[in-house]
Image 1 (cartoon, rainbow, N blue to C red):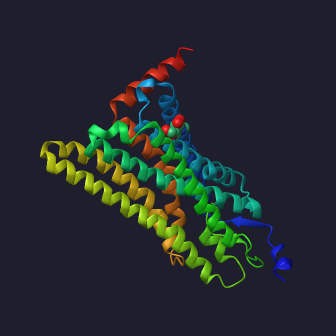
Image 2 (cartoon, rainbow, N blue to C red):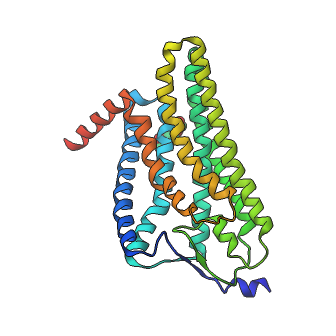
Image 3 (tube, helix red, strand yellow):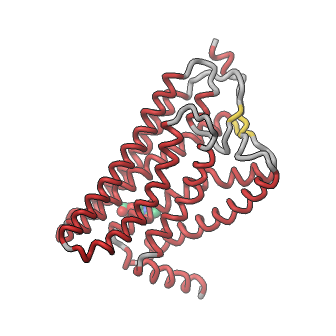
Length: 308
Ligand SMILES: *[C@@H]1O[C@H](CO)[C@@H](O)[C@H](O)[C@H]1NC(C)=O
């Protein structure tokens, strides 16, 4: 019976962020500019770290991987959004929708684990400086990065395994500019209470737990620095407050989207903009523009590219 119904929905309609033409035009301009900055900024980070031997250290390897994930995350969502806005076409195929959800959760899960790895790296560098190179060895870096991807992959597979066979027979309008689980599940024509619980437990709980873990680890680092010398505190505070800002901006929308399965006000789609357009800019900006080595290296790279 499900099989027959299943084929009735072969595509979804993405309602997008707004029906107003003026707002849409603003979104096109805004997203295009931001996407270009994300593209160039993150590419520059990856190239600098790859080609500059001065930047061959655990912190920069992790940073380059973060930039790569941010770049993929934006590329998954923003070009399609811009295309849909400017062409007026708003459909996405069933497979396209499932693929988008799958990749989104692989990238999101990996990014969260990578942020934990970066906090660990800062912890070891600040609190155990003498053991830094032995603990954060190249092998450890590869382990952390491949662990991040593996966990992202497992998280996404587990989640999709539950929902990919849901029957769809009725409405097919998604009130957002991309496909994600909360909206996808709601369109299914069986009672999805258990599914919603599963998504909340899986994605919501992971976002929440990671968020608190990161905040606690940053507080722990600050306390350690403060105990050692109060003069180092202001420098550590300025570095870490930037990181904490990124973490709040990244996790806030995630927690809201997954922990609030029945939104009364549709703000979650606007919050998602933060994750695809704002944090991917903030990450390279915060981790690099405040960093002398990185700035020098980028300047060198740019002048090399320009003189080719
Ligand atoms: C990611 O990290 C690994 C392990 O440290 C490193 O070998 C690789 O070059 C990094 N990837 C990017 C895109 O920088």
